[in-house]
Length: 260
Image (cartoon, rainbow, N blue to C red; front, side, top):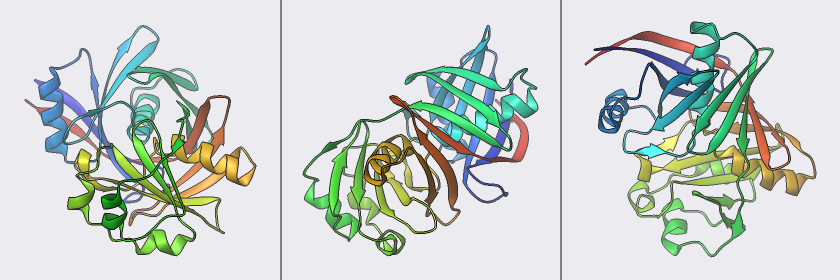
């Protein structure tokens, strides 16, 4: 059996930047364990699989360790493949997913995700999480799947060298650390050793948590963001009524076939 495979860098305007994702278009779903094995073999933060049903697409995302409910950069990469490689007719793609209906539309060179906004609540974080991060935040929150920790200055985010073994013991998909920044509205990093990814280069879904938080703090609904991984990612975010738009560019790196 041959399966088409694409690899694209999301939230960047150049190759080797942003976050790489694998994308596999399918006629029908493969067995879950086979999709998981492919994701492990790809060894990227996410592999997206999708099938087409009538005018919509159904999409699923796998880390090297397990299936997740939502992934931004792999959805952006999948939409890029559908638009450019599969020649989708129109400027918008609708996906059905474990997180409900999602959409991606073209806006010049940008692709714009439309995702549900996360809801956060203040919490008392596990002491071992702060120890593992090595820096004490000024605010602590918990969303649906991730912790959100807010720091005073960008330099604290840049200098952070987490103990990933300890972080992997935290019961959450991941940990978002963030601070205000002068060149853009906010910066962040995302750690997810529980999902087999010590640090995710650019995390679109984390911005469903970050955007409502910073929109409230800064008093505006349109925001620019940088994720401060080594590869760096650049995002434009907009808070809507219960939804978040997250925009970025995508660059194709590779296309080929899997032989199984």
